[in-house]
Image 1 (spheres, rainbow, N blue to C red):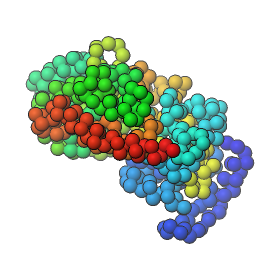
Image 2 (image 1 turned 90 degrees about the horizontal axis):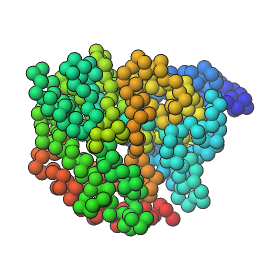
Image 3 (image 1 turned 45 degrees about the horizontal axis):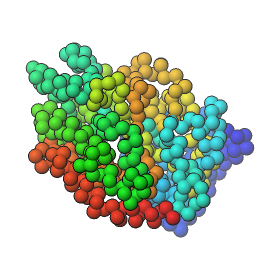
Length: 480
């Protein structure tokens, strides 16, 4: 930390600035006291309390950290306020590019050029691909700037009961064919264990973490990225609708349809593999079935261990891990959908503590903070490069954290994060990849004949075609 900034920050701790905002609300803020808000999405609050406490110990800068599950409903009001309550907001679902277009988030170019307390250039600490995705040319700006820091990276797929697999002699499946055989074996077991516990009523989309990995493997990097760009074979948005045609050989959605077919054949047509009425089950039901040893696997993201323990009020009495997603072609390579890779840490443009907030984001990139997040969040990783972070003391004693580390380091990782204008202007949930957020898993389990791959993808294509002209027009309006 620069000496002058530290001196100013510490001196400011003794003062309180009280102002009355034109937009109403309590605008009393302590000068130099950072207020940090993180989304309560299964990570708990121990991690932010630990990191904030250590930052204060090292710098003398006071922080008021908090977590909130309703954060997503208040981001807009926070950013438009002239007197925001928070200096840093960490969450998924932040439309930061749109806010950058409106001048509501602080530019972070100098942060990315700075050196953190470990002596590393901040830009070098950001996880691969995160650097490009954090930079954006805002509306009517002449050049791109950094406006966010990646909050998390992660793994998504099938979490499994390690002890149960060992006791029954079940091999962790390497391929889809292995997974099909395993489910049949589990279902035939006299102990009455379910292959899967899942929550179609509230978390059906957790199956995406498996299906997307199959999609990426089937399509390959070039075809997948072509779809992610929302452009067609001529490189323009005008022909981008080509990606959504499931009947065109080699199109992105022809492969997406194949991946859904794999799930459909495994899950939708085998209701005996899932908890009863899984299509309408809530998350607590699925969590209890898994932690009580009544199901062998549960589709989830990196926050599974912490969230299941917190929600059920129980601790796992068996080892739990996330398996590498069984691959399509039974090769050595596995594919990892980076759940949370689009999550963001931003600074409101009207924060009175922008420079101090940058200091804290810099501290988040240090080895201490990176390790603390994994330790206290019980598995998830921050959006920084862990290649030179010694995790052995954590992974040696935590099978779950070790499995996440393995997925991140040994699998081919990809995400749905993108800065293309079609997605920014129209919203991720409307465009990618389930058009209008019409996720079929729960309905397919309930009435499989009505949600066959042919039916689902014909409807998706129709919806995309009917929306495409307006999607492109909206994209062009923010690209001038």
